[in-house]
Length: 316
Ligand SMILES: *Cc1c(COP(=O)(O)O)cnc(C)c1O
Image 1 (cartoon, rainbow, N blue to C red):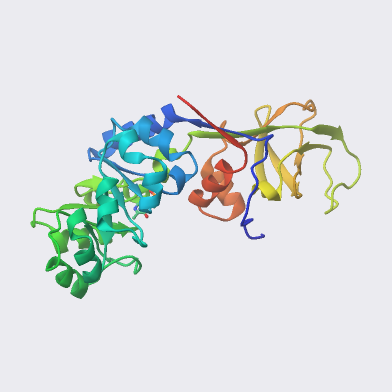
Image 2 (image 1 turned 90 degrees about the horizontal axis):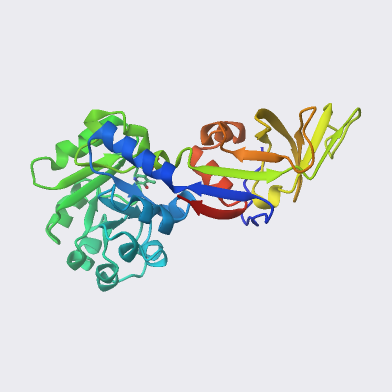
């Protein structure tokens, strides 16, 4: 299994349709299930779905947004788009407290020096419960408390015990606490004062499709690898757009992506599949988790890769 292409070129013949109503439906379901305020994670251009459209669609359903960097919030004009509090969870780079304040973004901080530097920008304490990056351990948090007044603290938890640890460290101090990403939404004890889902907001919302350029019956080996299949199809999407071997859906039937080339790929085709027929790479029942399984990677990486394959369009 090869590595992902580091510089992908979207194919003009692949359509990426982002259904914002489904993103809203996901948020509504999370709210009903958790009964907790939602801080929607829209880092990496909302996992490729488009931060501006996603944040506008979610503005009335969530309590705030999380980006990785201040730059992402500025690029999406997030405060003016959604008008909800914004937390930047990654390193602050060279930005000043004034720049954070101007963009209505609160910086996550994890050292005493950062706490001092961003004290005016209502910094949020990022607490280590096992991640060991961009986080403060116990000794550091004590020093930080002397530099700034903290009203909010969070940890990046993958296990329920980590959320509980945060609550034990900072509970009862009047601070807003949050820990749970998508993986912990089912854990009542991890919900604390808010939940911070990313991927759970986006599942099922993207449909990636292209069309068969060619389809032919085949009675001998084909392609570079000499694969054999009774009927093959060719699609205009390959390595250069991030495609890998896996699954697709043609006329409602699951088919294999048999061999991927630079700008095209071979797929298995059904008896009656013809040139021009639609080939679904994500959606219509083919899930992010299935693609991730075939690619041996995370749903997050699969979704980011799929949304970058073609021309994106947001629909409501
Ligand atoms: C990315 C991220 C999330 C969301 O993770 P999902 O698994 O996509 O829900 C939550 N919190 C932090 C700190 C993150 O970096």
